[in-house]
Amino acid sequence: MAIPSFYSARIVLVIVTVELMIFSQQMVWGADPRNTSCGAPIEATDADRVQFALNLEFLEAEFFLYGALGQGLDSINASLAQGGPPPVGGQKANLDPLDRSVIEEFAFQEVGHLRAIVDRVGGFPRPLLNLSGLNFAKLMDEAVGFPLNPPFDPYADSVNYLLAAYTIPYVGLVGYVGTIPSLTLSTSRSLVASLLAVEAGQDAVIRAFLYERARKLVYPYTITVADFTNSISGLRNRLAMCGNKDEGLIVPLELGAENRTTSNVLSADTYSLGYARTPPEILRIVYSTASEYRPGGFFPKGANGNIAQRFLVNN
Ligand SMILES: *[C@@H]1O[C@H](CO)[C@@H](O)[C@H](O)[C@H]1NC(C)=O
Ligand SMILES: *[C@@H]1O[C@H](CO)[C@@H](O)[C@H](O)[C@H]1NC(C)=O
Ligand SMILES: *[C@@H]1O[C@H](CO)[C@@H](O)[C@H](O)[C@H]1NC(C)=O
Ligand SMILES: *[C@@H]1O[C@H](CO)[C@@H](O)[C@H](O)[C@H]1NC(C)=O
Image (cartoon, helix red, strand yellow):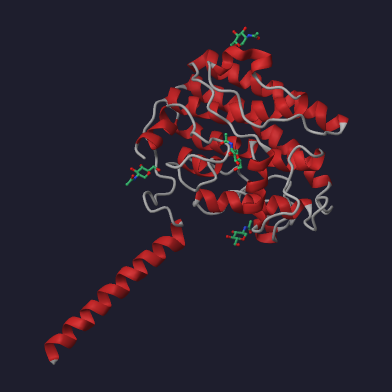
């Protein structure tokens, strides 16, 4: 009897230990079975890192161009797309005149950013982008945690469009903050610093416009603008699986500036410094799949360039 119980006790111990290991792993990193590493450095050249940003710049350029003008990059400078497929589902948004002029400016700034990257380090074909209302509706359902009725329409009015826009430049911004320390050439660092400056400005304007309406309900739902932003930021944190790097417009004091404000017009860390994200974190978010290996969301066939393609090839 003594020997079997010794063994069964050991078996129970092993099972409990393994279960605890799996549990704590999931607690910390979420459920991606293949790669649970968070923020580990990736191997890449400066050119690869700068070009990775083209994916987000294409997304922003197309979303803003369609929103403000009803037509995309191919109507402005088709050569920048390098033969990549046109985006799916982009539409002119029903914007107030003030918002429209600002979004039009952002749209052309993004064209400038595309040109900057293409002229300095070279480009690649535009990836397929999904800008359809349905894609944003799905994203917002995932953010709030239930199916919105009627489905969220990003192009319906200014508030909806700004909420949809809230989902995009911030991801570029934290990506640039994450990229700069890994760049070796001063020319690359100066390019990315200058891209970051304007990207951060765009995010700040979008957030400030939304902040003015923070306590208003988003028609026809019973959810405020601030709650939408908190939900979208929460979704991005869950998808990226690397802790809190994304905060909505009204937060608990411990996330505010110096733990003293609940207003949070800008999303920043405990020192009020910008958060940084790695390319895998960014892909997990823009694919909406929580996996850099599984395309979807804004990039139904995946992002382009060496960094993103490496994850897809390994899939
Ligand atoms: C997981 O991803 C990191 C980069 O985020 C990479 O350095 C590491 O090699 C990957 N591990 C596996 C097992 O694929
Ligand atoms: C498109 O962008 C490229 C790269 O900067 C530039 O050389 C070209 O003149 C632009 N074309 C148009 C039509 O603006
Ligand atoms: C765009 O997203 C919507 C919602 O997920 C989906 O129904 C549609 O098939 C997608 N389009 C493409 C081209 O992937
Ligand atoms: C704010 O609170 C956090 C704990 O929630 C603490 O770590 C941090 O030091 C505080 N910051 C300041 C400036 O007091």
